[in-house]
Length: 188
Image (cartoon, rainbow, N blue to C red; front, side, top):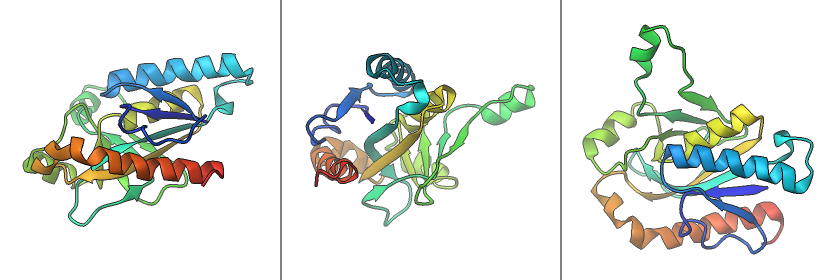
């Protein structure tokens, strides 16, 4: 298992010994770092290929609906800040939604925008439950490599002006994410 987190603060309470990648903030860094880390893991472990590595992306997310809190394992992730309709109208098919197995039914929207504007929140809430800045990129990199992936997100804010309090909330979120990972490893 390779755990991918955007920031060290989100991964601060992962169990000792868990292979962890701090990929950086945003889609480009997340996709590039995840791809490189999976390929290094295959080489280092002697795995037959990327399909033998499992990636778990842990991190915080903004809630797009009132009352959403706690831990989510999305069933789908979307790329919310790409001009999908325009590009499709020009004849360029693209992937802007990825179904994820064994999720809880929630949808995560990923973009390079730190969402703290209530109008943006309302627009994204039409199609998603949560918002982050890396999940789609990690999932897309894994999908292209044939690597199993799971996204695990803990709500840190309501993707409005409360998002600016992220620094005060991230440690609690990281503790919950660490507990979830430990439970999957049988270390709780």
